[in-house]
Amino acid sequence: MIKNEIEFILNDELININNVDTNVSVLNYLRINKRLTGTKEGCASGDCGACTAIIAELKNNKLEYKAVNTCIMFLYSLHGKQLITVEHLSNTKLHPVQQSMVDNHGSQCGFCTPGFVMSMFGMYKDKVKPSNQNIDEYLAGNLCRCTGYNSIKKAAKKMYSYGRKDKFSKNENKIIKLLKKIKHNDILISKNNNKFYIPLNLKNLIKYIQNNKHYKFVTGGTDIALEVTKKNNTINSLIYLGNNKDLNYIKIKRNYINIGSATPINKIIPILKKYYPSFAEMFYRYGSTQIRNVASIGGNLGSASPIGDSLPALLALNAKLILQSKNQRLLGIKYFFKAYRKTALKNNEFIKEIRIPILKNHIFKCYKISKRIDDDISSLFVAYLIKLRNNIIIDVNIAYGGMDSIPNFAFKTQKYLIGKELNLKNIEKSKQIIEKDFNPLTDVRASSYYRKLVSKNLMDRLFLEINNNKVRI
Ligand SMILES: Cc1cc2nc3c(=O)[nH]c(=O)nc-3n(C[C@H](O)[C@H](O)[C@H](O)COP(=O)(O)OP(=O)(O)OC[C@H]3O[C@@H](n4cnc5c(N)ncnc54)[C@H](O)[C@@H]3O)c2cc1C
Ligand code: FES
Ligand code: FES
Image (tube, rainbow, N blue to C red; front, side, top):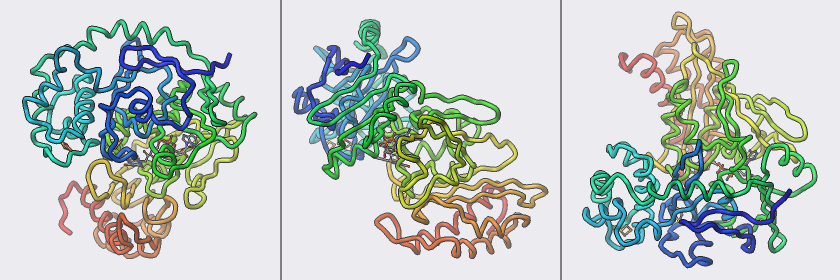
């Protein structure tokens, strides 16, 4: 049975809704339809964090809280979830997070404050130790122009001293019961000739795409929502994959990490930490906590940006993709990127799974170069996969982002390095060859000269790190 409305909990009220346009963001719905104006709009592109709210989802009979940017989240993707806004944090008494912000002078003009409070609330609900590193991680997606970050960080450090249990802990069972009442069916919303389809499972999704045309997939929405918020376009037909359990998983099988395409980046980090720590470390610099909580690996591949961060890493690792239409096909990632933002995906086809080989005898390193450490897109990205035998390079992949119109291998450099000893002389020579592999463009993120220079310098970094920084160059 197909339903024509979504159900979600707004703070503690169960809402059924189908009378709002399918392109409306959660933020606009809150501010315009519900007059909940505590959640602010700064940038409308996921960068400033002023619009941060919390989503609570039922996972293993518990609530899992995550901070999100409501400005780039489509309203109808809230189906089956609880949305908590800043208005709901306190009733007669301020929430510990708010009291700490007041007492530690964490606010001046106050515009950014609701966003910071909600990010800190997300951290509080995750019961995260308030170390400098954790605070930076949780607050990197929030910008403040006046207070300065010291007092805000101090507020985050002290928030637990105002109590570790809040009204949300006490109400948790009530919310769990309400969430369990929400029926999970296929949902199709039609409004003003626009459609938003939420398939219950993979089978229904496959059936729907056989019978429909001219739709776009949305998973986290952190890329595609900007079509609406920044370019002012209307997307007539959307298929939401973010809720789909059949696309949301991580499994280890026959020496591969198999990741469902809708799995958010933050869920992938723990498994990568085990097998490819450098990949996991890079993911901590991927957008912000709000972005990583919803942005999927499938969406990163689907957007096929030449500066998408997971793409060169997956290329270097020889990942495989399961592409799904009526039937499935397995494609090596090196065949996936065809031209600038063009992929091998056919009509009615989507990415179902990403398979990353577990290569225990190789060295894997990747480096992201961007103007800011946090919440910034790469100017340049490189991933290296190397196998050495007696210090001779017997296997090597070098994949760059930001050097070409697609994420691509440094073919000539790879060819030169095969069979060579890993020493300073050969690294120096390989740096000259990289020049022949790429002719990068100059844009707002970096000049062609800078990209060429840094791509060479990163070879030195690789060499030094493999040698534990014990050699001088
Ligand atoms: C503030 C901000 C910071 C960012 N920082 C980074 C960063 O550091 N590094 C980085 O690489 N990117 C970054 N991005 C870009 C974006 O977040 C990522 O590309 C993200 O992984 C996209 O995933 P998503 O699930 O949100 O994709 P969506 O926006 O849902 O979709 C993106 C595209 O992929 C298609 N698509 C989605 N799922 C599938 C599927 N299963 N099969 C086929 N097509 C599909 C969609 O139709 C759309 O064309 C940032 C974006 C913002 C707004
Ligand atoms: S308004 Fe800036 S991140 Fe949403
Ligand atoms: S207090 Fe003014 S922007 Fe942060």
